Amino acid sequence: MTAMDAARPPRTRRLHPLPVRILHWINAATMIVMILSGFGIYNDEAILDWVFFPHWLLLGSWAAEHLLWHLAGMWLLVLNGAAYLAYGLISGRFRERFLPISAREVLATVRDTLRLRLSHQDITVYNAVQKLLYIGVILAIIVQVATGLAIWKPVQLAWLTALFGGFQGARLAHFIGMACIVGFLLVHVALALLVPRTILAMVLGGPRIPPQPAE
Amino acid sequence: MNKPLLPSRFRPALRPDPGLLEEHAPALRAAERRMLLRGSLSLGALAMLGGCSTSDSAGIQAALRAVSRFNDRVQAWLFDPNRLAPTYPESMVLKPPRFNAFYDVDEVVPVEAASWRLELSGRVAERQAWDLPRIMALPESEIIIRHICVEGWDYIGQWSGVPLRLFLERVGADTRARYVAFRCADGYWGSIDMATALHPQTLLATKYARQPMADPFGFPLRLRTATKLGFKNPKWITSIEVTNTDPGGFWEDRGFNWFSGL
Image (cartoon, rainbow over all chains, first blue to last red; front, side, top):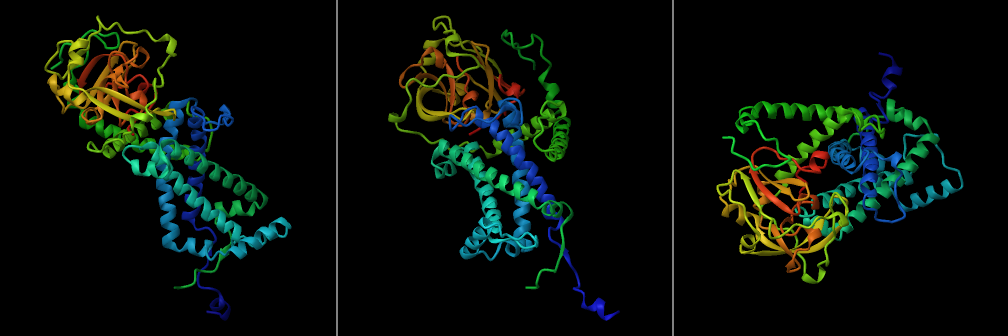
């Protein structure tokens, strides 16, 4: 064994381990199913009378199909989402990638972004705004599942529906949740397209990084 | 045990022996399980494609409907027969209620009270048709509940009539049967599970806001259950059947979820 071999870190790992990549892309497809079928359900009883979604964008050709898609997609969303949360919490990935996060750091990142001085050299470390957005969208999807259940079961889960201010309150919260998730999606996809290496990393695993420090 | 049935243009004159179904129930259940497994697999594969408008394919339709039948079972399991839906003060009642059917309100054909009869079939002891005075003489309950349409709108309504449980017991219905099916004067039909039929907030309503129900809302007799979406509440009911054979429904057969519990 040479000295050089000994100096090399014992094991490296990919930025995005395989389970994360699989869960990410299943989630991406599921979110598109939920959003585009949800648009169709929304159109049949609009909350804002000036907001309608164009027919070509919808998943399913009429109400029954929008609902079939939405209430099938919910299983994928919940099962895949639960696996993602379990993996992120147990493997320590959430803590490693999203923490620590400070208000000062967030402000500094926003300032750098506005001055176009944000660095994309290192994609293995998330900046404070990225951390905030990823935590935010995970929480938004969890709340979205809760408001969805409140709309689906306003009698069996009456307490949950009451928590969101009743049936129409839950519908409004579900709509706002959708808007937050779609807003995230637009920023997320736009930035990924600006730095295509990040998309490649979510497919192939990305650069090798040092092993997680031992506890 | 094929009982004679009342004539109906929605029912074939000759029906297969229901015993046939029971005989093959295990095989059917196994096939259904396989369908669900295959359905969820193809759904997963399809989801990878993203938002393509591919719902037209027969395979996808079958997969989506298989998941919908699975959702029926999940909802039946979630349904708590002792849980009451929230009720509301009389001041919140919408008068008149909101009309909805598979046609416009000006196309409603009123039902003649004098000639109207409620026919019974299937697993019930008493087959004699009921007329309106006899129905009105039954003990009455009142509920003020939220009507929720599958489209997303809702209103508070005040309904009175005989609890369906009481009526079923009165006519000697087999309350261990799986379904209660309804046929309506306008050609609509639908069905609910027995657990919902026996729920205390499931009425055969004859009145709205303590007044005889107006024609557009189902005079003389409609179903009003607090634990299901609006379309599960047939109006202008002309016949009730208690059965173990899945009767489907007007919207359900077109793809809306059958259980549709709240």
